[in-house]
Amino acid sequence: MTARGTRQGLDAEDLDVEEALALVKDGNGTARPAGGHSPAQRGGGGDGPRTPSSPAQSPESGHRADTAEHRHRAASWPEARTIAARAARSGAARLAPVSVTLGDALGLVLAAPLTALTDLPSFDTSAMDGWAVAGPGPWHVREEGVLAGSSAPAPLADGEAVGIATGARIPPDTTAVLRSEHGRTDDNGRLHPTREMQHGQDIRPRGQECRSGDQLLRAGAVVTPAVLGLAAAAGYDTLAAVPRPRVEVLVLGDELLTEGRPHDGLIRDALGPMLPPWLRALGAEVTSVRRLGDDAKALHKAIAGSGADLVVTTGGTASGPVDHVHPTLRRLDAELLVDGVEVRPGHPMLLARLKEDQHLVGLPGNPLAAVSGLLTLAEPLLRALAARPAPEPYALPLRQSVHGHPHDTRLIPVVLRGDHAVPLHYNGPAMLRGIAAADALAVVPPGGARAGQETELLDLPWATAGIDACFT
Image (cartoon, rainbow, N blue to C red; front, side, top):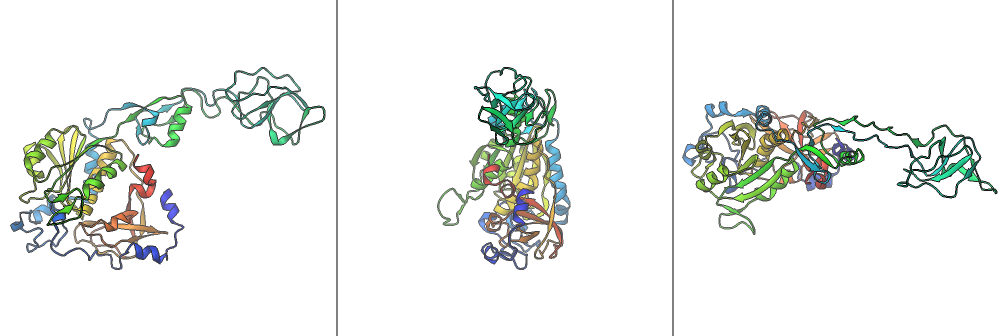
């Protein structure tokens, strides 16, 4: 909730920001071409009308007609996310714990409880710079002080004091530590307190924070920078953790360019640059990104030979002449766990079990539709594989109404302004302009949502953790 909390102070009437982000007025994404799609939408990413006359979905175009039977087979959006998370929790799919150094553990999940290997602190230490004193003052001060990291100091006799640094070991028989700002010396060099002292004052006793064997954190805790510090203080050099799931990305499509401007019917590949860092932000280790074009043999070889825990494909999830994902999965005898989701954009997404310990998420080819598939299927699967806790669900009222689909959930990019979510324009399945400016996606139920209605939100990783934090 930290990032959301910081946004509470933003002026809800900051019109320059609102205009710069092109906030919607009617919430229905009218910039989307009706009834068709661009070449970027190949692979079932289009969100055109559900009518036989729509080129994007007609039998003549080679795409599966959106019949009542197909709608029945598609999973609801909540059901699809549940299936994805459950698939990763099966015994064979669970990732075996590994031992990692503290330097490599950030962002992983503890596979075992963090138990103190020593008392903290491991000896009585000074909490302040000043003097360790014995008995009531005034005190005769030793010439040599006690520094942090020095060997065991000699005991103090009554009426004796020694200068001491923060973190230094307390001499035996010390009564208290007198802070440097609370003492003065007289003309004879004797130390006097300038305020009343308590026995044990400013001494951190051994075991104050924990005793050896105490459980500091449970298994399942995410390793944050603070956890690394605690582990180091408690004596650890390595941690038992759940490794990052390994993901291979296969970008499909003959029409995709890897550099330069679109030309001659060719378009830039937006998913190749976008998906790997997004997957890393979701806790994955991206082992490779391969561009295969529309080649059924190459796709079969790539999937069959992959050693990744999760294979992510882009495009080719419908039934057109160059949509090879379904035929390839049948050839591999894969088990389809989700074949279509009642969500816009991105309804032709799929989830398959290739092996007991390997899955495939098929994303539509449209950029925003692919993001929808990523957050619907890949995110809960990766979260469960990495044993990460599910984020706490939360909702905010919408600033404006949002038109809904008659049957399906809609995912709409929003920015968070004060205690409201403001829908963004440019939310068609082939568009990234809205999501690039967004803080979250609003989960709009079938039928739409009115202004002021509380709507579930999916935070984008960098909106809550910051760019530097989420891509480590």
